[in-house]
Length: 71
Image 1 (tube, rainbow, N blue to C red):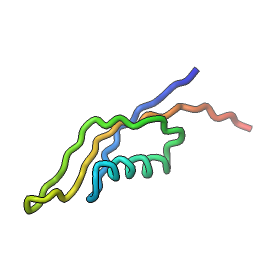
Image 2: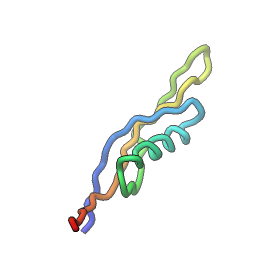
Image 3: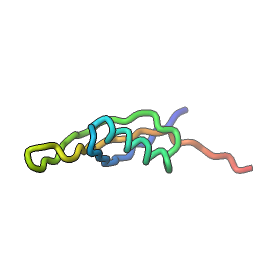
Image 4: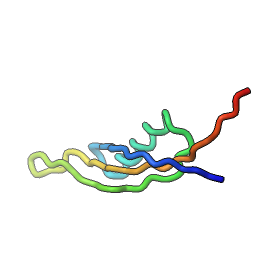
């Protein structure tokens, strides 16, 4: 049987939405094992001087709950 957990994470980038999502996966994978998927809930940008200055992503990260066996 497989059990999954979902956490919500905010990420950003000055380059693109794609990089913002990659930043989420990169940072989440430092403490979360078994990431299965990322659902993009919301995207937005901030604007300064009529130019996009930051890309922001609100994402749900789905990962497997694993049972560790003590040895």
